[in-house]
Image 1: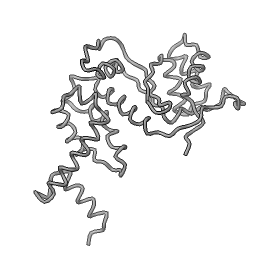
Image 2: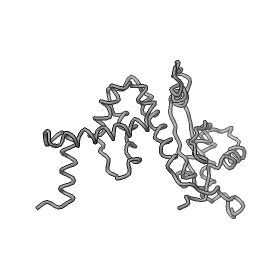
Image 3: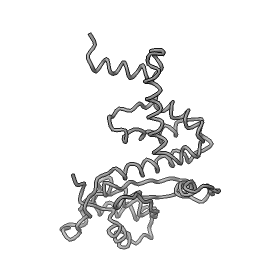
Image 4: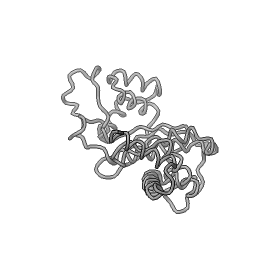
Length: 236
């Protein structure tokens, strides 16, 4: 006799892979409709860039290859950027995976925990201190102007974005209820990335200067503190 887990796994596979004939068709349709809508809600710009019909096909294939493994629907879809990067069908839109990464970052920070800002007055050894990035912050780097692409697609008429305008270094951050996207310089991005990787402040400053020799470290840190990008850690 099959265990409950084995029965559930077989049932899920039958729905996702199209097995089981008409008996499971109603379940299959409901699953694909709900998961497709979840993707559409998180990735409206991706959907607009590829068109509704192609997005539906893309969503159906994605659901088969990356089925939801969590009871929390908010966690479904985080692999879409990687999926798009490996999909030959969208090779004419090379910036699409990075747009997807930006949209997922906006989704993630919206649902992240709050945290108090870092208390720099308690630092006894700044050089070796490790300053955590706020839990509601994500870093996105792209060789394409993904912020301009995203912003253009918030309007009814998206207009034209110059893809040769250069790349973006971005921090996506939710302060309060609304996520926001902020451009940072290459050195500032290197500094935040190093801190996100749990490097010491001294190591992070070295990485920042290596990426941008003219960076004003004091001004950069002041900006991060004022923007609350650094925190004490998540609150329960």
